Length: 114
Image (cartoon, rainbow, N blue to C red):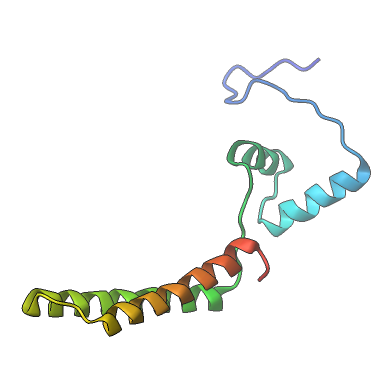
């Protein structure tokens, strides 16, 4: 049995058995997530419960654009509400429609079906 190095941060060794097919799947997923170390990948998966990799920059840009539009609309509605002490139903509906778009983008991203 190997002796642990005295200054080693991780001193507990965990031993598991996996099949060749499972090892291949782990290696593929590890590389897809950008990890070079199988140990680090397995630690992250075990501690965090999963790794979400989003590699569609266009979708993220579109999501950021939609969020920015909503922020601008909310600012405009706030200004009108402060001046007139009222907000129109049309303004509220516009923000609701834009929020629906955001929720759809989030569903796509979080489902992993990019």
